[in-house]
Length: 243
Length: 314
Image: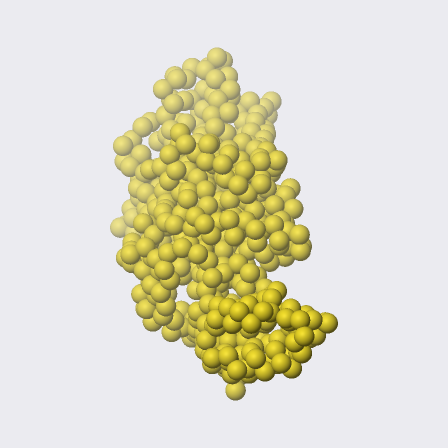
C-alpha cells in the first residue's frame, strides 16, 4: 500500500503543477458553461421545468467528463515509458496494481475536482427552480462513476504502448464502441439488443443518474467496467514489466 | 552476492546475451567491458530485474530473481544509461519520492535525502527542477536515487557517458567511495573507466563472456606472463647491462627489456609467469639498488581488450 500512496501523491502534485492539468480544467469549465448557457438558459431555449434543465446539464457535462477522462488517462503510463521513468518503477519494490491504482485514483480525484467545479450551475437551478440536492448528488455520482470507467479504459489503453497517440486511438476507440452499443441496441432484435444496452457506457446506465434516479444496477455496472479495465491494465503492465 | 547460471536473452529470434554463467562475491566493484552491442546493458537490466532472461537462473543475495523479484528489488539500486528523472520534480522532492517507493520509513526519508545529497554533492541544487540540471548533475541525481535506500547491490550502466573530463573524474571519485559500502557493477566501453574503478572485469563480446578476472589475471591468462615495469636507481659503479643481467638471473624472470636509461635511473620491462614484484624488489635492494617504480604494465587493459576481441574475430 505504501507504493500506492506514494505514486498517488506524486501524480496529484504533478497535476497541480502541470499546465496541461489547468488547461484541461479551464477548457472543460468554459465549454460546460457555454453549453449550459446555450442549451439550458439561453434566450432561444424553450421553456423547461428545472428537472429537465438539470438533466440537460448532466448530459452535456457527461460528454465533457468522458473526453477529459480520456485526455488525462492516455498519457499516464505511455508517458512514463516515453520519458524513461518507467524503469524506476519497474526496478522498485512496488506492485503493478499499486502503480495502476495510484495513478488511477490521482486522475479520478483530479477529474472529480474539475467536475465539482461546475457545481455553481446546478446550484443556480436550485436557487431559481425546483430541484432537490439529492438529485444533484445523484447526478454528480453518475459523472464520477462514468469518469472512473473511462479513466480505467484509458489506463488500459496507455498500458499497451509507449505512444500516447496510439493509446489515445485505442482508448477513444473502446469508449466510442461502448457508447455506440446504446444506439445499436435500439435497432437490433432481442436478445442482442438487451446485451448491447446492458453493456452501453452511456444511455441506459447514465440516464438514471441524469434524472436523479439512483439504481444499484447502474452503480454496479460502472464499478464493474472500472474494475475490469483496471485489472486488464494491471495484467498488461505485469506482462510488460519484464519484457 | 550474484550467481548466474546459463543465462540467455533473446529478442525475437536474435540472441542478445548468453549463455552466461558467473558468480560475484559481495564487496568491491566489478566492471563489464565490451563494445556497443556486446550485451552489457541487457545483462545489467536482467540483474536489475528490468528484464527477464529467456533461459537460465539468476540469484541475487540468495534470492531467485524470477521467483521473487519484489524482494530482490529491495536490495538493488539501478542507474540506467539515461537517469530516470521526473522533469517536473525538484531534486529533493524526487529523491524523497524514490526513497519512499523503495520502502524507506517516511519519518527517516528527509534525513536520508539530506545525507545522500551531501554525499553526492547535490545540496546546492536541492530545490532545482531536474529538467534544469546539467548532464553531470543529472547523472549525480541518478546515482543518488540508486543509493537512497542503501542497497546491497548497485548497478551503474555507463555512468560516465556524455560527461566532460572533470565530471568523469568527480564521478569516478564518487564510485570509488561507494565501493566501500556497496557491491558495484559498472558497465562501460571506456577501458580506463573500468581499469581505474573496478577490482574485477568481465569482458563481453557479441553477448558472450569471453574473459573474467582481475586485470592482471586476464592479462596473465592471455599471455601466460605478467609484465612488470621496473624503475631502479643503480648502485654506484653499476652499468645498465650489469643490472639487466642481474635481473635476468633472478628466479621466475623470463625476459628483461631495457625501456629507458636516464643517467643512473633505469626503466626495465620484466616478464614473469608470476607476479614476482615482492621478490624482485627485495633482491634489488639487497644488491644496493634503489627501487623507484614497480608496477604491472600500464594500459594493460587496452591491449588485453584488443587482443581478446582479435581472438574472437579470428
